[in-house]
Image (cartoon, rainbow, N blue to C red; front, side, top):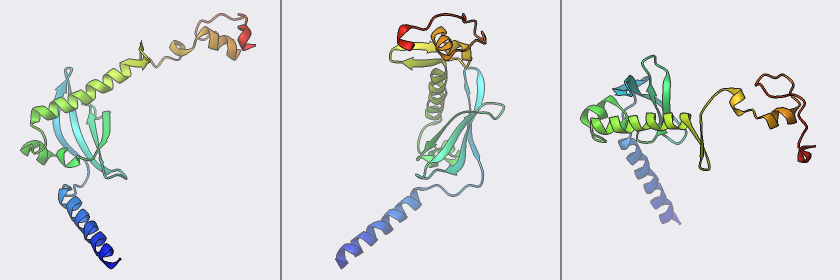
Length: 159
């Protein structure tokens, strides 16, 4: 039993040493590590250095006004620093551009197209685009806000 405890303690010590050596040095505040152009607009890639409970750091892509367009938690946070961008131990600068442009492209596709099992509809934020005549009738709404007709009979299954 004692040997098992010694082996376990050694394993934990080597794990702690390994994770410390792989982590990047602590950085105070946010770190913009790159700027790039996507669809004619300039974006900044920022490592916020905010750590999540699983050890990942929050990476953000911001537009020219500083608004966050895309964000994600990444355990490869050492790759999203100015030093890593300049020395490219993780990716070549074009690899960063492909990765970050892909994040923006995926975000744009998620906003534009909502996929409902093969049926795709334009992503909208207008209430009336998602409020059918049936919902209007069943709810008893009489506002006429979305141009639905009042006084239609409920379907027999809804009575």
